Amino acid sequence: MDKAKENRRIWELDFLRGIALILMIYFHVVYDMNEFFGYRIAYGSGINYFIGKASVILFILISGISCSLSRSNFKRGLKLLGIALLVSLLSYLYNPEFVIKFGVIHFFAVCMLFYHLLNKLNNILLLLAGTGIIALGAYTSGLQASNDYLFPFGVTSPDFSSSDYYSLVPWMGLFLYGMFLSRVLYKKKTSLFPFRIDDTVINFLGRHTLVAYLIHQPVIIGVLSVIKQIN
View 1 (cartoon, rainbow, N blue to C red):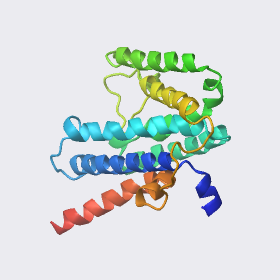
View 2: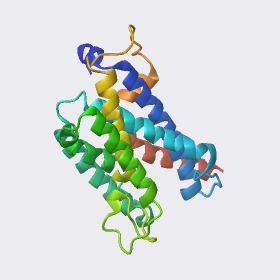
View 3: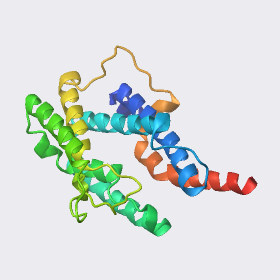
């Protein structure tokens, strides 16, 4: 990225995105150690669980903000959808038991594709819709359907599985909150701070999260495989 484009970026969003990425990588290291390499490390509760959720919450809020600053959300959504389908295919080929049916990239792709419609909501409706979707998720999380036709919306059967799963309900509620925050905090589409912090590893990661997301799992599995062989 050239310096002019880099200076137009809102640095704190890159920084927070980088933090979210680091938290996600940590969580996936723990997940892979437990699921693929036999290390008994809990990730469904406790601090590891909260680190994983904190990562996703940050990503979704920042995505809602960033989409409000972009002019090409539909094109970006189509690109992400293609990548998401490829991720599903590759995860199935790696291990059908761990196929990703509707992961975080699928989620972001759908949000971007429908951003133009969501953006027609005023601020009050954004907050109400976001809260309503989150509340609906609390209700549907206890439901058990007889099929998985509605799995993108969080309604699944007891047999449903997806190694990465972020359904539109309730998670789109956070995306709408991000859109609201953008309207309140970033009306001028500039940083909230009178200074810039760009030259850090965290900011660099925040500017390249998609690439990092796509390569980090193969790298983690490769490194853990080597460690397992050494031990």
